[in-house]
Image (cartoon, rainbow, N blue to C red):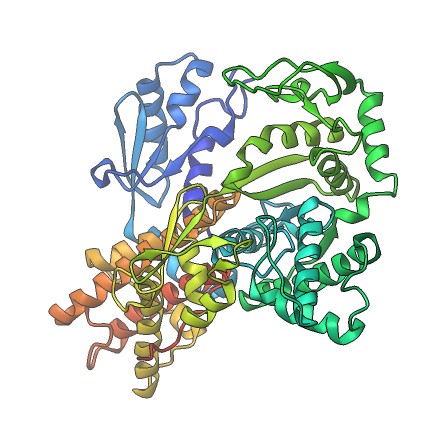
Length: 580
């Protein structure tokens, strides 16, 4: 049940001539039916008359008054007023709002689930950190965002593939192999020095010792070409094993690990670029000097270029270096062509904010290779600033000085880490303060939400001990007519928004909206609870008043279901009981 969607359908049906006149042209997706920010403007407001007025050849307010009068014939609508240039402000009868409670209790975990995904296939690529060490807390934000988005899209009817692109074909992997060789020499008793390009983390020490145990001194003084391939493979394998375990600690399981290296020497890159060449999108040309930049070593030279400006980019992009090797962009194009050929209807990439300059060229490539058929969204994740003892921690893999993701999970727990990482929009900076996330106060968002759910569980346990039937089936048939207090009504109206919030978050690829909603729902629940402490008639269990108590239990049990649904999308376990 989505009461906002139902009212929206009523509004559309009552627009004059909408079904019979070809002259009325309006995009239904632009019609909004939502709670206004100012509660004095009614409970639900719609812009339908404003959007339809021009096409219907009527003044917006005149059309709004006509539609408002028609809407009053619906049993659920108590009042319909026209405001401003033609907004229609609606007030629903209390019974209409209260009908949400039995709908939630009957739907259970399915409440708010949607079919807007229409079983379409979507590939969500996230994390894709270079396999040069374990994940750090900064990586966790993109990992959690990607998994929460995947869960959200599944909840609304998409078939989701979670994918990790393993960057095992670049120069950084050769640097990793050389760093492992230094650790291998160190394990053989030799003094070593790390240069600026080395990875110095102790996490490579074990691998160096393992290789020493296996090969002894065989490669200590051997020329690089004899060992670099072997050490590269061993290093990438060991690092990916660490990364998989790190993801498991966050409750994340990838469906596909795609190797960049698998694109080289197989003809895949060449085939992809030939496809673009056949469409006159690959050519030999000379790029103009970048505007607004003084580059001393820049010189005009002929390059192999992708005509990305034909699909919305600012400048055409090189796909070959001067030595004939591929740029980073070339295998990325081939990789996304592989996704397209695998039959995905939509692609979502989650990049770090330092990849913002890469967005337009990748979108251009996907548009060119799919003829615009495959929707492609790129979400940029801002950096995380890790705070320890009031100081910002360093996050450098090369220096070996960073807060490992696994350390953070051990310190605060998976649920806390996941929720905190989703309390800000993906492109907003986020501080991860170890001290703050352990606080048990309303200022700690995860505690605030979990405590609300635990409070409901505690009162349901108490009610059951006192002989109440607290099954969803029994509560769904409760007489709700006594639920009239503003604090109770606020909680009902908040729960009614859940299906709309889910669809909005899914359409915008913004799972943080779920976290925001849960915090607001928790605020409503805690407010009702506090009021019950002050006003006896608002307490959830009323001595001798079975019908009244049952109605209140139905109210909060419905809230518990919505909490559970929302936390499930975020990948957070609802807590039944708070422990000290």
